[in-house]
Image 1 (spheres, rainbow, N blue to C red):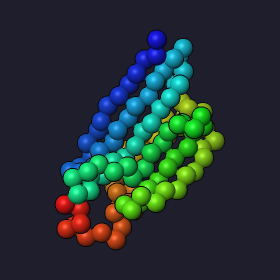
Image 2 (cartoon, helix red, strand yellow; image 1 turned 60 degrees about the vertical axis):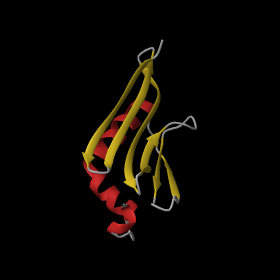
Image 3 (cartoon, helix red, strand yellow; image 1 turned 120 degrees about the vertical axis):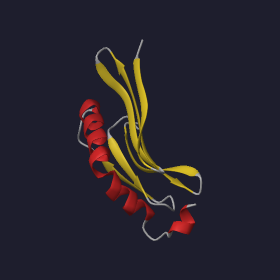
Image 4 (cartoon, rainbow, N blue to C red; image 1 turned 60 degrees about the horizontal axis):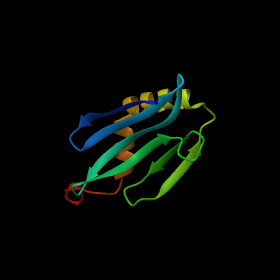
Length: 108
């Protein structure tokens, strides 16, 4: 049976990190760590590290939903650790990049 770790960390009002991973036989078998920004009352993904296509990668979004994907040359354990660290360290920059071009009224 896989062990599941699932939690949310609130960084600021309207900014949170969602962390999820599964461990089977001592190895990470699935993971997703994402930065979420609340826009008009709805949580949107700004950045996500995961392995949903069978390989480690990071998806970066803008507020309009445009997406860029970067393949990571890392095993699942390393990509999970790096993604968690990167979001913890750089969430404010990613938030600013995600919201670029919007004013405060458009966030409500």
